[in-house]
Amino acid sequence: MDRLEAMSIVLLTVERGSLTAAAKELNMPLPTVSRKVSELEAYLGTKLLQRSTRKLALTDAGRSYVDGAKRIMEEIDEVERTASGEYTTPRGELVLTAPVLFGQKYILPIVTEFLATYPDINVRLLLSDRNLHLLDENVDMAVRLGALPDSSMIATRVGSMATLVCASPDLIAAHGAPKHPKELESLPCVIFAGPATTTWAFRDPATKRGFTVPIAPRLSVTSADAAVQAAVRQTGFTRVYRYHCPELLKAGKLVQVLQKYDVEPIPVHLIHAAHGQLPLKMRVFLDFAAKELRAALAKLSPST
Image (tube, rainbow, N blue to C red):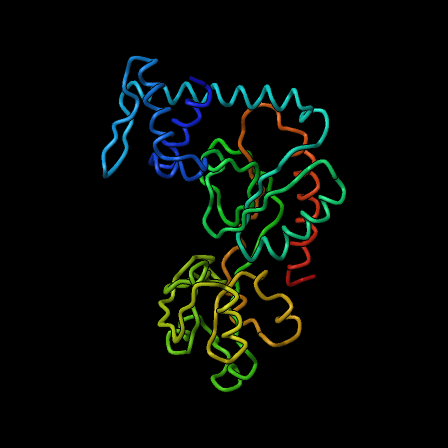
């Protein structure tokens, strides 16, 4: 029995929630995966997993074993990275994640330029509007928009991002530009899952206090790009991040309204797990990307 392989299988099974999911990811027959786990349990003389047709659960011994196994695998990874020169030469695979549209517009160009500069590094870029868990999903670094929860992650701030309300010039000509956010309650609006919801937040310019306005949308969509395109087609006012439509704003195809009621811009960070010395591939990317992102986000400021 290969104990290291069996340990890895148990950890993957717990992470994925079932033997079937682990077998699929390993491209290994389910009976083989089940047998290797059973052989490990027989070797240890204790049950690690309670298996049923509905769910999989760890026994008390299993929880203790998994905690120890995670530490062992992290130490093995550390030893292998050191042996491969990952701490002295920028090389290896770098796994990054970012929101879909932000990643396409800003991270992908940075990554392609970075790859041209560092030929011994390969990048796997995971674009997702779901915040992936860095440790559980083996991600090295992430772009996060918005306030960060308290965690053990190390964050490098690279700028900020404003939200705005905008519409096409023709729609504004037809309905008039709203003077106060409350007027949006009776105006056609487009919402999407993101900063725009059925309640939009604003800030009183005099008191600096926040308030919300309920929105009854004429159109609800599931992406910011769709909301922007609908706004260009005169469907309604929409609320998006500035990075969703800078070219359209500059070209006059969309016009910002209610600017003095905008909420504070949200922070943008690069984050990574805070454990041990950073592999050189991560350090050089952090330096490279932070500089490029700060420059790109600064250009999005309305004053530039």
